[in-house]
Image (cartoon, rainbow, N blue to C red; front, side, top):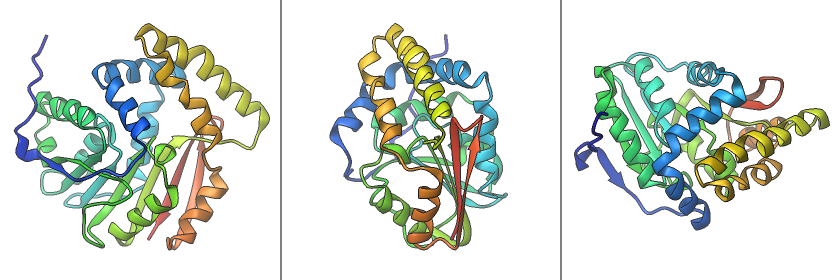
Length: 253
């Protein structure tokens, strides 16, 4: 088994984080087994389609070679690595997350990956509600399963708008809060019988019980579109994926 050695500390930047302490501690607790658990759950819930969803999320940003891109709430880096392939060695990708443990995993994956362009990724420990970047800094932004977890969604959208260049796009992938009762029933059944069951095998059943309530408290696709327009984006569209179980908001500054 390959030894995972975190990359040198110069790849990390730290900023104070203003977030739900409870949620931050949760992601710290699950970090040691997160990648294995995430892959198992994603394959079961999506029948492997999550890989397509993530590529769609990145493609919707229209990121291109040489661009400067941000993956917000990056976790262990899935979208950041896909962005890196899009922008190439002459571009730059920043992966930001409030969990230092998750960033350490991302850094380990980066160090073990054979793709040279992944060297263009920098990992930043920071706050989605107070991004440590100047106005109009990024050509593209992705956010995967993160907006649902921030304590102030409007503030998070405002910050994405602020650091994005005019004419550029943000693409936000997450569970969809459907307005269809049947879709909601399927979603709840999958969480109770797949997510929590698998998480129990890792000793993390309680840590994943929050998922159902976080979706109920989330915004519908139409509400996400309205929020994006409210904070200043010129247009916004929410796409339902996989029969409405997942969703992707695409907004242009």
